[in-house]
Image 1: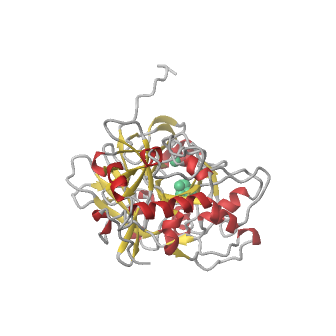
Image 2: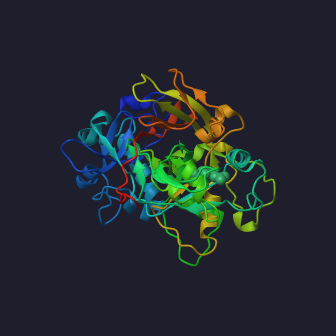
Image 3: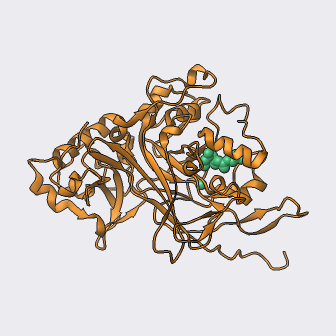
Length: 422
Ligand SMILES: O=C(O)/C=C/C(=O)CC(=O)CC(=O)O
Ligand SMILES: [Ca+2]
Ligand SMILES: [Mg+2]
């Protein structure tokens, strides 16, 4: 598919992340208004609340855009998702009959503050990148051998929806309990091994029923769209707490997502197959579609005061072993009800080479091999004031489907209000 032309001139640049082919969904506010749904087109945001209020968009009897999140639209299901996309093509495409009515509803991106695009109902994080799993095994357990279940199950854990934040939200370094290998007692204080994880987040758009498993193809059709996701991880807290039940405080303090939901429809032309199965999957994990996408990804780091960000790593979402649809089908396989607004982290995305690793744990090999930034600083883990950014782009012929940066700065830990002498 070539670039689809818009009358919004900035959207027609081959390198712009938000051409008419994309139309990602976000929530924005300006100085004079409350947060409301918006669609990015070039350097502008279409105010969806206004578009609905003026009658330019009417998809259902009841309004969908009187709330500052996209869940109401999601819950209407794939036919309404497709109808909205078609209507947006008609309103924003070159030669649109109603251009004069749409023009006043566009807000310059520079005037928009971006908010969480959805109400996250629940958040689950997977472990579906094979290189990452091998690296973590080698670093933490002395062997790159995958766990016995890894080639059969998309391993995951239930995370926290309450601490999912939108790009641009600063987070405090977490306090937690850690224990040095040679220490007799654990201690409590700010994490010393703060890390990121480069992931893609899949957003579930429709519900599944309690008790009712779904197929991988049904799961694929339930996925509304994708965001970049940084699963901030405190490695020292995680290392002490995680056996036998898995991550808890080490990953509960914050998860950042990019501000625009890139729809599955916009990514359709970028589908990519999962790699050959090293062990045949059980039938309930087989689907008929290519479940991954060709999305170029990058991690950048900028210390406080540095004049620019340094690129740490570049990889691609097509490196994953399990797709989001396989993960979703597995999630529901025991009868767990899935809901519109559920967020599924892909698992850390690492390619084969060190320059493609998706966490600092891997990039510095657990701190044993610190790396140097373009601006001269060295790092093994995140220091206070550092800003970490994830980027993602799918490259078409003459157009780009961008996600918008997923960025976050780390602030010093809060002082814990513990009782003295305790
Ligand atoms: O292998 C381990 O002990 C730990 C692995 C992770 O922390 C990774 C995780 O959260 C899942 C993922 O993002 O792949
Ligand atoms: Ca993770
Ligand atoms: Mg998290």
